[in-house]
Length: 230
Image (cartoon, rainbow, N blue to C red):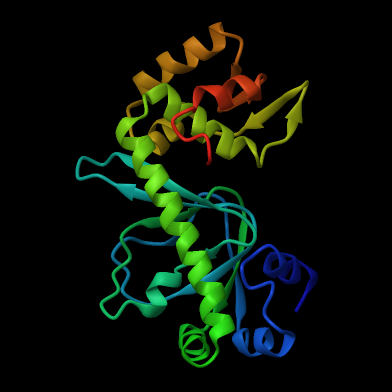
């Protein structure tokens, strides 16, 4: 296990598994690289695939019939993806997954995972804890999408993406176009342009070509108040 994989495991709910159990779980596991902007998986896929994010950021997005998209999860190092597919008899992937930046994913055998979960309560508990967190996150995301204003949704997604950004003159850089931001929050570009103009006038962000600089993160946290625990 190389240092990057070890760090990702330590950041995941697999970290407390005994060494021999973890070694068995990762038997035959291989890494794959997904370049920036490339889909890691497509909606409608029926093949179970259990992966650990080793490096980079992957987003999970759903698509409406009219083509609009909305991001429902950001997966960073230590995140487990596709776990529910391991235990779903009639699995069909309900969303696309896309690398926001170059990502490295560790493919873990669904068959080995399922077998160990059946026979080892420690593995089952680790997976249950992870799934419980996913349910809580999705409920919070749905609540925000249903009841939050566009301004609140924009604030949340800027903060989510800014956590991976570089500092620039006291601000956090978010490399995102206005179109991509609109897709992430489930609206149209014109609405996002208006919201960004308001945030810029309020001294919260600074906009540049294909990037947004968050210059007042505390104010942005206040803006996304519909989900203070996220």
